Amino acid sequence: MTALPPRKLVVGGLAFSAVLAMLLLAGALAYGRKETEGPPFAYAAGTEDVAEGCRGILALTNTELVFKCPEHPITIPYTAITLMEYRPEVSAKILRMDLKWKVQLPVEHGRKTRKNRYFSVVFEQGGTHLVVFEVEPQTMVSYLAELELKANKRVEVWGYAD
Image (cartoon, rainbow, N blue to C red; front, side):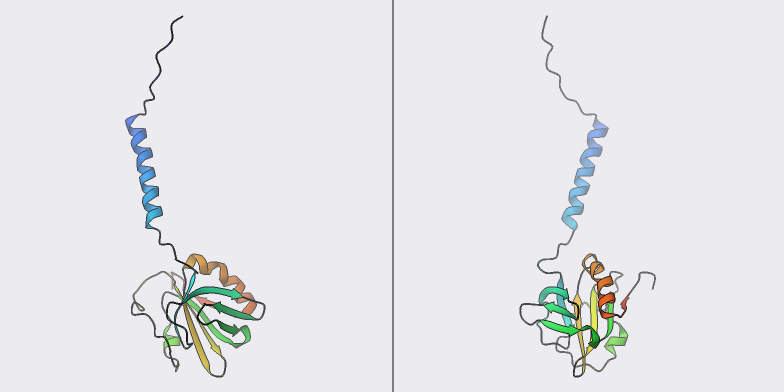
């Protein structure tokens, strides 16, 4: 009995091209994703004495919302909250309020985009205060229901159909 010569694996040209194209597309999509560096919430603007861009986490306790930023944590009792919004930009309703802004809105604010990115909280604590956080929708969606439940107030979310 004679031994058969080793077989060579031959992949058809069309199948090989299709697999290669799918791998390249998957790699391009993964490379194009913008990953947030560090904690998901960034202080974008408001009346609090926190440096612009200070990154932290948002903790929801039973009685208060706490922004844990290394420089200056912010604690807001749910009972003090008068308005919560999550929109592509801060609403005109908030901009018309007579507030003493310590950190102004970023220059790119007002650029027309459909993607929600600013979570604004107006609260009363010896006067009217405002905090505006920049946060990606993938992160914010997990907070919305819990915020509404604990604060017993609705978060006004800008829908794409609005």
